Image (cartoon, rainbow, N blue to C red):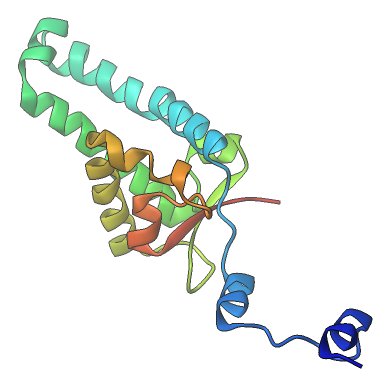
Length: 159
């Protein structure tokens, strides 16, 4: 009897490759569309109030805000700090919560650390400003973004 028949009949189990073993232990990344929707929710729930306060309460209106690059960077920094805080405390932003997503560390399968969260946000800023890097998850089988890959974290669907 051939080896193929033995394997098909279940008499001999195939040896699993190292890649299959690693894939079995790795986290499955959430689909791209809910992640984009979650980001849009975060922009409206977190960034818009920050921009409103900065524009109308701190500065003298839209023209002053648009004319000041410092104000735009400060709102991006405030947004980043709030997002990072959500990641390290709850592993979810409001948008992630709305779409049942969670950000986990690949190794510990738990919330990411402060240093990883800061690094992940900085990589997000780089990939968001360079449009080509923002399309990485559409061309990868595992749907991971550049910030997922470099920070060794994964956005998963919560069950």
